[in-house]
Image 1 (cartoon, helix red, strand yellow):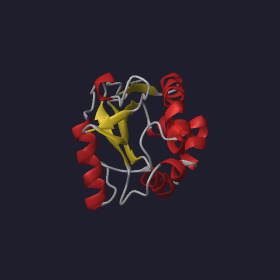
Image 2 (cartoon, one colour; image 1 turned 135 degrees about the vertical axis):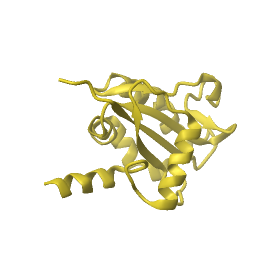
Image 3 (cartoon, rainbow, N blue to C red; image 1 turned 180 degrees about the horizontal axis):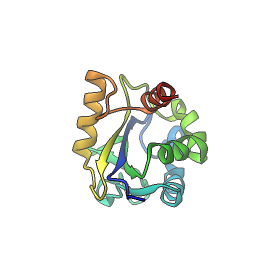
Image 4 (spheres, rainbow, N blue to C red; image 1 turned 90 degrees about the horizontal axis):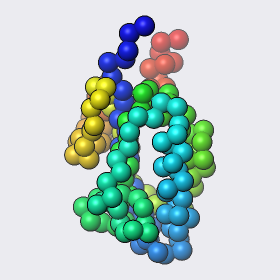
Length: 158
């Protein structure tokens, strides 16, 4: 059996409703290490951005963007879309995802994007931002998509 030639990257961005330290967002912030640990142990997980210089502080362990402590981001690589989707929807992450409106402001346009990457490639935040912008501008394609796009492709193949 031939090894796959590509994996998928996932970039996610969201704006907190309140500054870290505010009780409104404490449950989200307090659980970031737990959810990240589950991701790292999940089948199909390959890599995630763990840039400690981008952490909001020693005690607030999510990555922020452009020194904005309200912008939480994640960037990861998975073996397949199915592995990512299982983690996102079927682990404890799914419970947090269903409560996202409690902690995050509404986002105009897509707030996450998935795209193929060559095996061994480590995507950058800039790549994630560019793919998210492409998804917002042009809609889903093979180069920038969401879970709905992959579900539609699977239905079309049936």
